[in-house]
Image 1 (cartoon, rainbow, N blue to C red):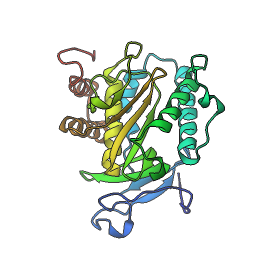
Image 2: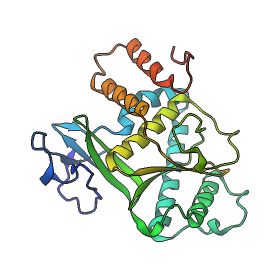
Image 3: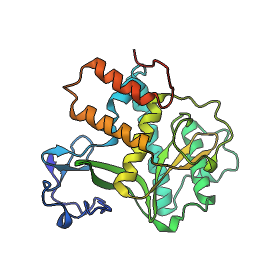
Image 4: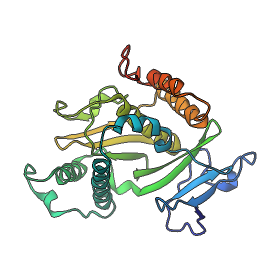
Length: 278
């Protein structure tokens, strides 16, 4: 890691409690440093010699369970498709540019990635819920102290009064704590559902809410319709976050069996009385 001396090309947002401004930081806390991460090329906040916790770090054990049977090359291919999707949607919101196929009336002959881009851009063109003229930027870094632990996140799309998380993977949303009257999707049958994926989603959106202090919306392209929902924070979500932070902080202190017991407690929210961890 190298310390990043020039941050002019990075978007670092102030947060509601002032943690985005070093002049108003609680002086009893170590000063926040921004270091350039060699693996990602992104700036990331540190304090007290520790990296700020991310949703990825906190849900690592859940992702290992979720993807343990999926070959690595498939995961890499999916990650590349996800990046292309994000880049295209962010370019549209930022500059109004989009691929020519977005203007096609029919999208049935498009490949899966282009189909998702087609329906997402057209949804953004038509929706009145998001005011595109109030767009602030994409890939903005936010961070906040939560119970003396520094959390950080980059957000996909930031608007004046909300942020939007872009998704294009195929997972059912049953069980997530969303405002269901905003769902714009007719068919759920072809989507699949796992408790690990749902927990990963929920923690990611919760951290975005805590770090930004703004409403968080999920804009999810399924290829067969758009899901657009406002995330609703809950005490259960906060409890799960506390459990995950404890797991990371005490990773070496817990036995594998204790870790499994903790994870089982988490997923009981979605599948009560079912033994999912062996």
